[in-house]
Image 1 (cartoon, rainbow, N blue to C red):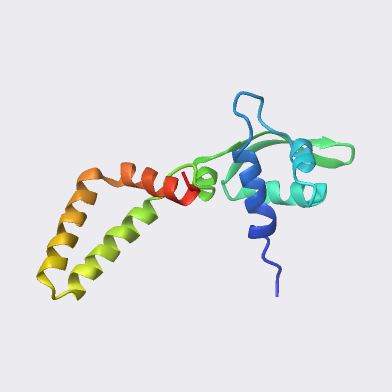
Image 2 (cartoon, rainbow, N blue to C red):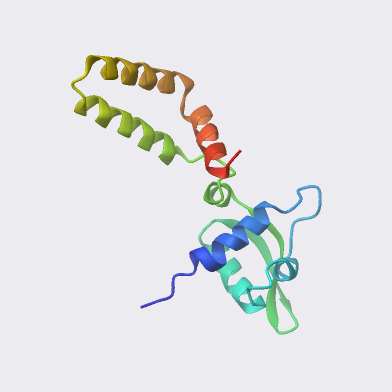
Length: 141
């Protein structure tokens, strides 16, 4: 069985990049290695390469002292959604689907009325606004 690395390697790396001060230049793999001492420079290189390949990041690879170093590391929209900086449409769709299933399941007129009002309000607010609110809740803001 292969070792799942997302929780112990890629996600902490994405979070470190997301928390990087935007007023400074984008981070480098060496700076991230110093910030995440629990990850070896090789683990960071492998993770950055995978995250770039999957569209979570953009970065410029350089051959440096016999290894690949990355500079100008930036999150893409996919990466920002992975760390909760940008809303995901999935949460909105799941919320609407859950409301619909509760509406289908209830026989109580008062509960049905409250659920219908909530569903209508959510639809009025829209995907973008509710997505931001849900992302803020997930981030604990």
